[in-house]
Image (tube, rainbow, N blue to C red; front, side):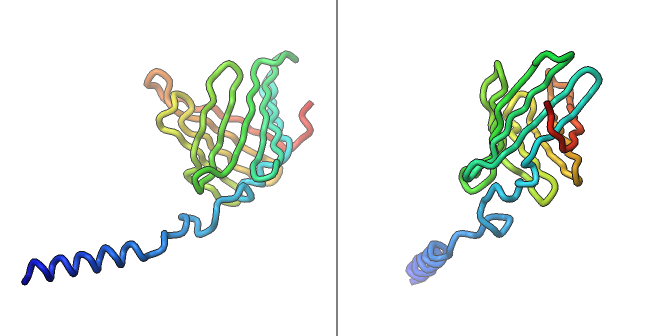
Length: 161
């Protein structure tokens, strides 16, 4: 009889667990690009003879961005960017010129900061944006050949070119 009792209790526990609704997302709200809408606009970073401009716009249910770096007036780098919901979470996707597409999942997002990570990517493995008024800091980090590397841009809201 103890074996039958064990089977009945186990069946009741399995049934109770299956009947429970799925927990809400960690943030307590559904995924939305509204969480990073503070990125929308044109951001310019000047460093010596180089200038990097990021432009973010909203397109339906995603943010669409483009980044371009020029040195001494000549274009040296560009990429297409996107932040959208996938699988219930924000995903930052980049299509850098001459490289494969890379996607990074959001690990932390609030009213002025967003962090996206993919530990399996070569470089970067982490992308972070911080906004303070009309200033935006972008940082990419990871390892190259086993050595830590960090690149930072200090942007101001502006028209770019």
